[in-house]
Amino acid sequence: MFTRLRIAAVAACLLNLSLAAQTSTYDGTVAKVRAGDGFKKALAVLDRDHDRLVQEIITLTEIPAPPFKEAARGKAYLEMLRASGLTDVEQDDEGNVMGLRKGTGAGPLIAVAAHLDTVFPEGTVVKVRREGDRLSAPGIGDDTRSLAVLLAMIRAMNEAAILTTSDILFIGNVGEEGQGDLRGVKHLFTKGKYKDRIKMFISVDGAGGGADITHGGVGSRRYRVTFKGPGGHSYGAFGLVSPAFAMSGATARFGKLTVPATPKTTYSVGVVGGGTSVNSIPFETWMEIDMRSESRTELQKLDERFVSLINEAVQEENRARSVAQGPVTADLKIIGDRPSGETPVDALIVQTAAASIRAAGGRPTFSWSSTDSNIPISLGIPAITVDSGGRGGRAHALDEWISVDKVPSLRGIEIALVTLLALAGA
Image (cartoon, helix red, strand yellow):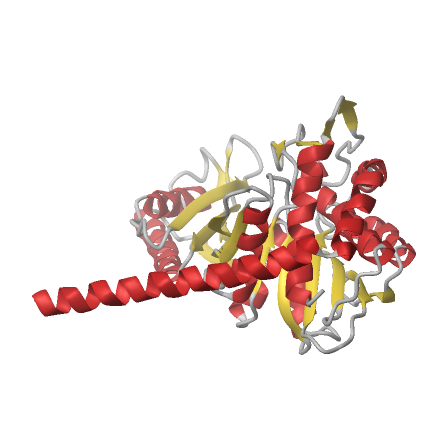
């Protein structure tokens, strides 16, 4: 036992030394980028043009981009990408808009994306309200600020004449939120013209200070379950099976499931509906549910248990009441399927971002979430999600806000730019 403990201790010590050496290497690479005249000039451009960044945030925020209806914002952003000096600017079949900033071609293609869509339905008032350095409007931080930040970075790189070894693909993608189910990035990596060329992916999403690195993709499975039955008058047809009771039985069973804390696994009933009147047995009820896990295995196990309990609840209702006019049935439709996975913390892309944060005076944190990076991560392509810097809050709420105070705003953009340039071989 003593020998095994000594071996383990030595192995741990060697691992720590190896990680320390890697950290020193990444810090050195970032330091070289930051010391370059091109980077210093790019920072000066970002500082000078900060008011333009703010105006573009406002302009884009006030173009509604509800789920599956991002076309107007996509059209505007396409023209902004074109005006920024990118080449091969285009819109793909799914609605993603993109353009290429060409390097020498000696490095791997890197994709940098921010999503066009918001969670807010059509008709939501998206007028920006300004109070000092605080801007408020639905979707302004998630993810409209990031779209404007990408434009600012492109212009700063161009004016500073920064040359990279890698080509960089800048993207405004559709379908990140909710039932969009990452459809834009799914198309990009499975059907798009660059699907076999992208070797690294950075999603810029949200406003949170710039110190967090999302390297793990939380997988999710979402269902809309529709329960159907014969229906009837609540008094005259009393005793017939009811979709409402079947659904409530299923919900009760669902709520009693136990799931592991590690890897973190969760479930929820998010939306319910159905029925026609208070004095009718409903002929149809429905619910939408969400299941998530950091583990593909645990998510699959939870999915199988959920499907099983739906069947149990239907059978119980059909035994409990009369099926003379027909039984209760349940139809399960998948409305969301996001794969899970992880880019290791010691990966080049993660450690480069961490070094960029340290160089800006921050302390990097590492997290898991459900973002556009889930797709490349699940395909084995190194990917991370970082925020666009600055401060913000109330994401997905009508009073969502960001701060455009220049100092923290520029610090966040600086972190993202250094990370990109270090990876792209500036």
